[in-house]
Length: 192
Image 1 (cartoon, rainbow, N blue to C red):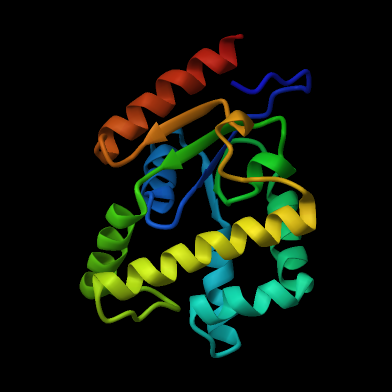
Image 2 (cartoon, helix red, strand yellow):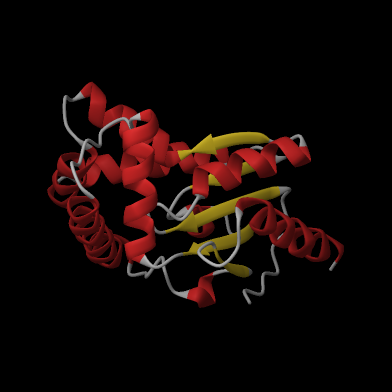
């Protein structure tokens, strides 16, 4: 559990692997709490789409272009100036240390199945993989790319459980359970 001497903010940051449910969890938490919602993943997908790139292509571009991470990080830090916010972002825990920091953990095979199902059902901006295996391969490459990039840029590992106040396995808990677990821990954190 992360100890923080900073003044607590009414912000919940959600980090986690692709497909772990950050968007669904963020939307449900924001609705339940009456908080504003921000997603750096949506912001990144829109940037990729503006450049005519898939999310995987854009991630590869970001490996050699630090201005992309700088732009995303700037938006996250700006959002962190607010109160009553739920933000999903790999690095929001780092940029907003006064927040309640949650990591959503999920086996990448399950993540690939979820992402593929979402692509088939609703489409997903910047992603158009044709099979679960292709999604898995691209997801693993994306996670490894982000690990290396964040280590190089910031010297940190975003998926280290020690960075968070709470880690929730979204593979063994459904959305309602995940939200309930987070809300219970968040209320306890606020009272400390």
